[in-house]
Length: 113
Length: 113
Image 1 (tube, helix red, strand yellow):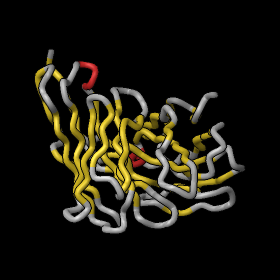
Image 2: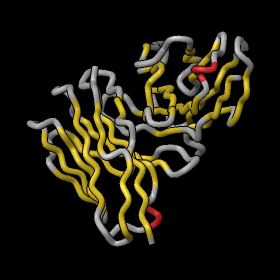
Image 3: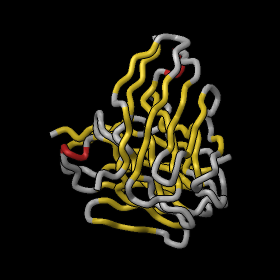
Image 4: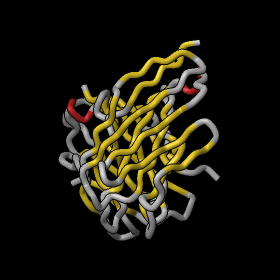
């Protein structure tokens, strides 16, 4: 039982390059989330998916797109990376229909030069 | 949307002392308040949570109190140990049906031996 798995763990991009961060969970959770963490800013929600087939914007969605591929997988895409997107990205999942705790992946450290 | 303020941003205590971290929230409809601990380079992990129908919850050395009227909640750690050193985040649900969490900016707790 791996929980929430994110790939890659580290990535360096040049400005303008694109990439997709992958996330998969094996807990049969309906809801999945992408957060970014920057020093002194806490965790800010980028996008979330309350259930398979739905996605919604969070607090900081600009510059990102997401795909809920199936119940297990939720990917985050940067179409044209910018230095302001240098951050640590966390995927998380939770049950739906009640206030449930988030289970986080181990994070992806992204640097955009 | 929800706004969560967390204080202090840093806290240094001697081993064995108590530590208190306070958070306020803005959305009176919020009804779920988790606390996460994040060790250096690791993912955030839930340590305790409280729902709005409860005023206090305790788990060994940690406790959380909630004052819905004043819209604030606090984390209390007693008999602190060096392994309690970490960043602690409070969060509040948005009160809507998707149970999105908004996080505070975090408190760096250092327990000195």
